[in-house]
Image (cartoon, rainbow, N blue to C red; front, side):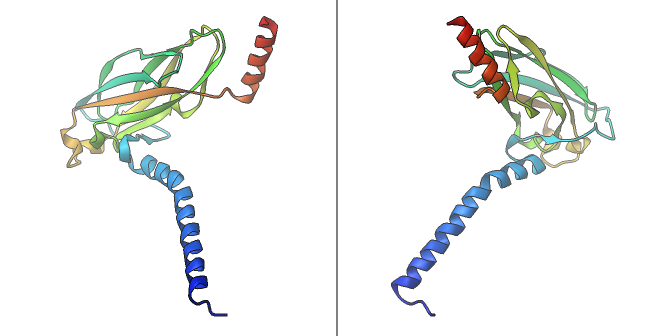
Amino acid sequence: MKLEGPQKTVVQLVAVIVVMGGLAWASVPFYDWFCRVTGFGGTPLVAEAGADEILDQTIKVRFDASLERGMPWEFKPVQREMELRIGETGLAFYEAYNPKDVPVAGSASYNIAPYQASGFFTKIDCFCFEEQVLQPGERVQMPVTFYVDPEIVTDRDGEHVHSITLSYTFYEIDLPEGFAALDQDTTTVKN
């Protein structure tokens, strides 16, 4: 059966819509994967262990913290900056406090500045890899372990980077299932 005229146009239009929908659906996970692999868009890389080489050159790493509008926590870096040798494993802490009288869950998004350094800033472990739940009045220190890849000194753009800023923004998320049930029990008792 050969399609002609309006039938052919409708089939082509449906095919284009299906292809565009599929590309739109796949674009978010593909972009996330691409950013994690390449460091594109200020997304740091992730590794299982520290660098194989530690240079004598040092680099300054600054730490920044912010909250999305409406997030009730207090959130700040414990140390504003540190200087470490390139390739050396660094350990920094951020502090979060929940002043509310109910548990609050949060997730952190992160970014690296300047953009040229994002492909060389590598996290080994980070609180941002998991959702965080703080109980009422709870204050915690959350670690991030990282290093700056020694290849930064031979990269055409990276060799001019002398300081890197690691930024986190916490935003509120729904409580995980187990916590939501506990929160409802406390609300029932209070009423």
